[in-house]
Amino acid sequence: MIDFGGPTYMGLRIVQSRLLERTIEDWSRVRSPSRAARRRRRGHRQNIDVTVTPDPAIYRVGDTMVMHPATYLELRRRLDAQKAGVFA
Image (tube, rainbow, N blue to C red):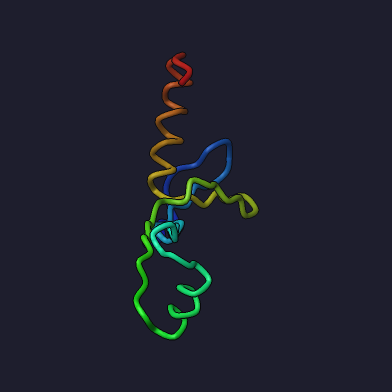
């Protein structure tokens, strides 16, 4: 879900998108990664660990900042702490 309205920061509109995720593949449990990749392309299941995490990056497109909701919450927490005088 993409939220096109809402918060701004220093005149920049903030858009939150759950689509901004990073996929990390851990190939350390396979004996031969190149052989496993070849067999995976052929459709064989491999012993790799796939982890999906929120992308911590903030992308600026014109006057808009696009980020994952988890990144927005972290940004909001840091800005509130900075406003209160507690630097984290």
